[in-house]
Each structure stands twice: as structure tokens, then as C-alpha cells.
Length: 275
View: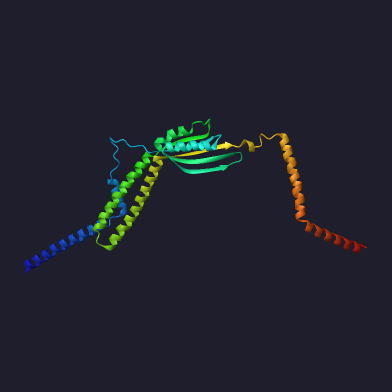
């Protein structure tokens, strides 16, 4: 009897151990599916492949910009010269504006040109320019920044693939919703970094050059006007002023008559009272 009781207790103990192992295994699988996003992000970034630079020449990413300002005798001829240089350099005019200042008229053009044609374009439009009021050429090396964004983008894509694998293995609705939320956030980050890379690549491949050229209007500055001409202009201005005064009186003559008549009667009445 005692031996049978011992055998029964051993049987129940073995069953309990197997059940505990099954529960523990199930909890571990669920915990793996519910692995926190931050931990997965760290693992993905740690395990992500860094850019292989050994034995490989990295293309430099340089953004070049130019800003030119000069005087010209003929605005149209200068504009035509720039258009020829734009066509020759396979560029295009992004903005074109013109206006007038106190003693000059100007035209301002923004050109986007392939970076490899930058120097030849500057040389082309500088032909015939005696001096520049302003000439700025800048270069910004963004190679390191480009590589860093590209590496982070690859890590995000790798993390996205890991979440997609977890989504395929998920069996509960709560787990699917949690994974989908993480996927949505990761996809937004991926799109943002892809946009940064596209913008940076556009700035690298196409340089920006702003050209402003102007023509001085000497005849309107008043420097070449003689003293006699100034006197004659002053005389004419005075004559026009007197004419305007009399014309103004003609326009208001009914009011002048009314005021005169009223003044006359009021004055006459006061005189009667005084008598």
C-alpha cells in the first residue's frame, strides 16, 4: 500500500514538472514576441553592418554654391551671354527676377548646374567682367553626414524586416497591433531619412549659383544737370505751382462766394447792434 502511494506521488510530480516546463516555454515565446522596441532597436543597430570602407574609395559629397554681382553696360547682352553658358553647361534657370533701384536697374538669376560644370560656368560668365562687386564661392563637405544617415537608414530597414518576421509569427490581436504600431513609427523614420538623402544628393549633384548684374542710370542721377538747367526747372516748378493754386481756386469758387456773402451779412449785423 505504501509503495503504491509513493509511485502515485512520483507520477504526479513528473506530470507537474512537464506542465511547468510547457508553461515556461510558452511564456518565453510570448515574451520574445513582445520584446520591447528599444531593446530590438539597440540589437538591430549593434548587429547592423557598418559601411565597408576598407579597400574602397568613398566618393566625396561636396555641396558647392556661388554668389556673383557685377555691373554691365548692356543688360540684355549679359543675359544672352548667361543663357548661352547655361545651355552649354547643361544647367537650368531656377529663378529670374528684375527690378529698379535709386540709380540702377538690375536682374537677378538663380542657376542650378551639374557640379562637374561649376568651374567652367563661372569662367564663362566672368568673361568681359572688369571687376565683381561681390564674388563668393563656397564648398561644404557632407561626406561624413551622408554616410552616417545612410548607415542609420540601413539599420532601420533591418529592424523593419525583424518586426515583419515577428508580425508573421504573432497569433494574438494585441501582439499584432503592438507590432504594427512599431512598424508604423519605423517606416516614418525610414521615409524621413530617405528624404534627407535625396535632398543632400540633389544639392551635391546640382550646384546653385546666384548671379546679379546691374546697369547704372547716370542720366537720372542728377549729376550731369547744369546749374542753368536747375534754375529753369525751378522756374517751371514755380509756374506750375501758381497755376495749380489758381486752378484749385476755380474748383472751390462757389464755397468762396458763400463764405464772402455770409461774412458780409454777419459784419453788417454786428455794425447795427453797435449803433
